[in-house]
Length: 361
Ligand code: GLN
Image (cartoon, rainbow, N blue to C red; front, side):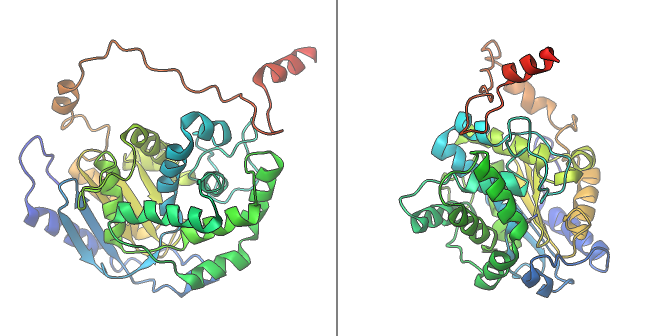
């Protein structure tokens, strides 16, 4: 795509670029269907869709764009935004970090020195974040979560009950993590309710266009570019995109940042979304995933797109103008990050205590 500062993009050129990428990878047979959630193994491995939505609300769609799939981990940035809106940065950060874990999405072992999950993109952190969604009842919390997802996609979402049941009855690893976090005071309240809400969140049905619209909402500062409704408070967009950039692709996040260079999120049903801030959102959907749970065709498409379009966020040739135009007001000092050694239930390991213990040795 041609950067907007140079000349307006041409609809025909964008469609044809996406069409060639679809053509290039439609016969790629690498990867396999995730089957640890048995219902996901029923997907058609040939399904392949690419969708792009701009911040002006223009949509491009290639391939099986009417296919629906469960959102899985693509939901995580949006529930993170909801938890931030419900509680603020300090509360959320005291319970869930913003550090890449370097581990797989379902890693059960590693919590950080404060017994927090590393970040809201891995399962442990996402379950903790979902447990923070406010509501008077379980139904109210579910309604608020669906409302957030619905506003960002611009329609009323539904849940795939078969996938929900499939994950609820087999998700013992997630259940174990949730209990560990209950022990450490990261989650409080009814742990089964938190898990059920998380499993429902992962079972929301979407299309590639829904997801591209949701990514475009993040690209557009939190306002859905089609409905013009505000979905995410602008002050939290940076939080969400940063965590997507550093942690959204799990133990592939570093390589992804290097080669593709965009805030992104993958889901084990085969979706990947990426955000080009201020410009557009993209979703690629294709169910076969690699050993890290990332869609194989999805990674191929994004790597080629990034190499050819200059959309990597550290590509300098199309950003100078925009950045330099907005550089005034820099004398304001940046606010300090919240102190994350604050008490969290019984889980706290105060940094000072830790050092004192060490110095006694
Ligand atoms: N629902 C899935 C799980 O908790 C989500 C994982 C993913 O999409 N990476 O395992």
